[in-house]
Length: 416
Image (cartoon, rainbow, N blue to C red):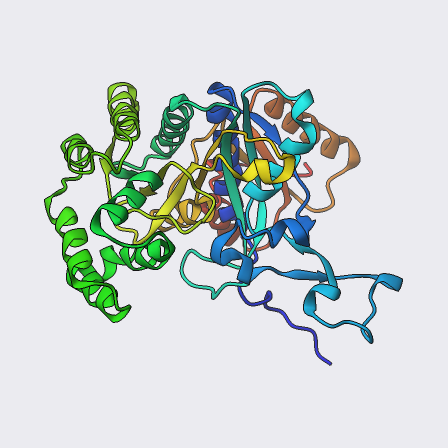
């Protein structure tokens, strides 16, 4: 059996060039989010299968890489279902592990708790551009804060980070799950049909209003409900006026405070943002996770189809672990997609100090070699990067290669 050179489907090897960008983005994330008061934690990549299959992860629960029981616990002969064979799985996101971590450690954590978590997650998904089966996620969450202060802080922190990476004219779209439900109730849809309606609505950007109408009709919904529902989307605008329109139109169905909170979030972010972006109200924004209970948001970047980040409020998830309701809100950036976009635009990581290469002649005496190492160490203490390399026969090719790696100074050392 021959060994395979390529990585497993949906996974990838990472080159030094990409690692340079990844390491820089990670350091910028820690620095930026740290200034907003977020504290780093880490959770295991393997999670209890019961937690991963708790009907809180939406479609992701169909994509779990499950782990077989081991040793005497693995009883193949008597197993009746798949669940008899597994006891763990690779985490598909960081929110479920965070909820477990918080429920187990809440007494020792500050209140509210502002968490930063970065790590790989795994989904048995169909690989495509910007989507892998193993990928890094980066989440910030605020647990224990019931007010919209959490949403405002999360949006400001995330938009500040994206702005520092030289992305301009990006957009943050915002909605509220309560507004989604109120629009459906106002139009006459039964509560048990909301999920079906929202799945179709989520396709609006791809199939348009007519396509949504066609799919709702195929599901057999009443014509009056469909027309009333789509009539709302024809009249609502992607700004504060749109929020106010729905507040007025949905009176008696929508709690006015929900609309007022959304207005305050948008106004506050607009007033103090430091990056160049738009925040818009989007009543078609659904987000697939079933655990969202309030405001939801996504980031999109011009020229890239799909989002590069998203999140929202999930006040009911932690209570599933503790039995006590705990307010929670989070924002996740699409780390892999952002790195991919930076690579595509040939992003150059800001340099600290010079990059210098020392080329030493083969056979150099020990005393001379020691001098070279001492000179390299002196430069490193001054903040420079110094790489020591043996001189090759084809020096021109060697120097061209070093220059392509960002070395701006090349110094040759000879034996005499």
